[in-house]
Image (cartoon, rainbow, N blue to C red; front, side, top):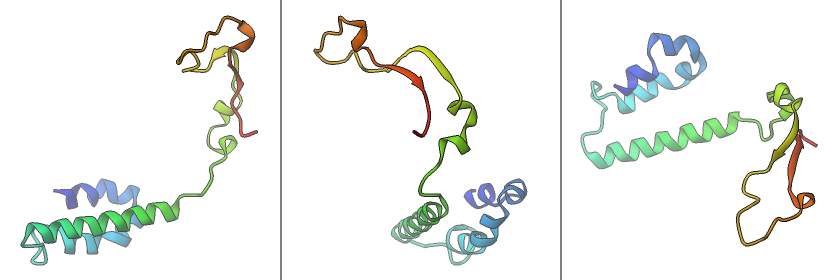
Length: 111
């Protein structure tokens, strides 16, 4: 089940902090083999919603508020383009008859 998938030996080695923080509580709340597993569907739904909120909050708290392109993908930041047109600029009723009016990428960067 889900408990085995999330907390298997392979997963445990990759995500030791996650396992240490959540395994016991998760198994207590959502392992069908445990006596604490909900008896009614509404109880199960309430527990799943509570776990979803807790995990979403934890992920949001751990993520940085900003990511610098230079740090995340130096290769993408350093790319130079020749005549790469911006997608979607031909949509709508505007007539693009002049080459001067076309938008093209020069580079990708934080500035």
